[in-house]
Image (cartoon, rainbow, N blue to C red; front, side, top):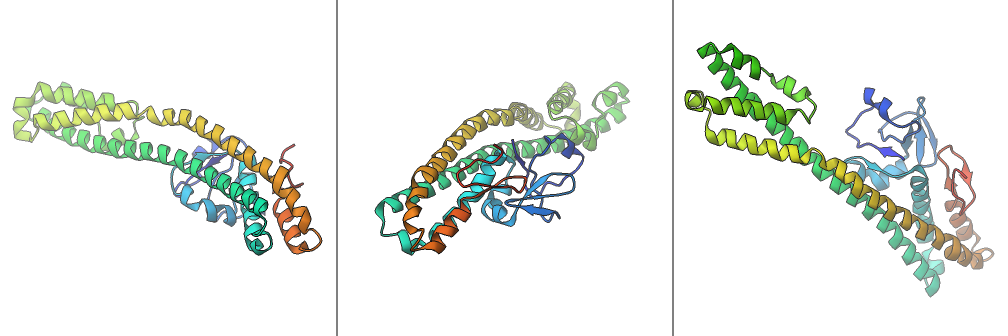
Length: 292
């Protein structure tokens, strides 16, 4: 599979977790251009300007997964679309040709909508989880400060030891451990609630923090659930690519033959666009799938 990262992410130590040969989006990365991809010294592949121009608004969201063959074929679809639109005056009166063209465009749009759908699901959940995590850290850190002040005034070293977590420590915790810490702090505060009134601790504050803790705990596994939805999208993507490849190979390619002699520029532009550029820079015969 091909992992595409949003522009705001940078290549760092975590890059070692990517599968060998994975496609990672990074702007302004030097390297040799290969079709819709560019390579850097480490062998990672990067989208070209053409690909970024068409997928830039998707890449501003969370990462999405599409295999390399599909990316190469999508790049080919864009070039075919451009060739057909540039020479539209030649074939627009041909009703069967027009019907094939419209079906081709609809399939391209279906592919893009599937990608947007997968991105929207993943991005919305990740964004909400990050918001709640930050609110939980801030709320818990504030409550801890109040409790530590109370513990110091009452010389309760045991309480101070149990709840002594700094904001940076909370932020560095694995997200699955954060709810447990927050719950413990709330429980300790509830045990001393009457005395904590002078420190600004209220029942409403504890209730709100508990509710936020529960919401955050529930949303933690949801990005994994998106993977299941992603599998459905992957299947739908494969079907859309199959339909478009069949349409080009079995219908549009044949209709171009009538223009071979009289409209040679159109014929050449179309079949040049039909060449799929493999990830290794290899030009594949029209209709042939790369990597075979």
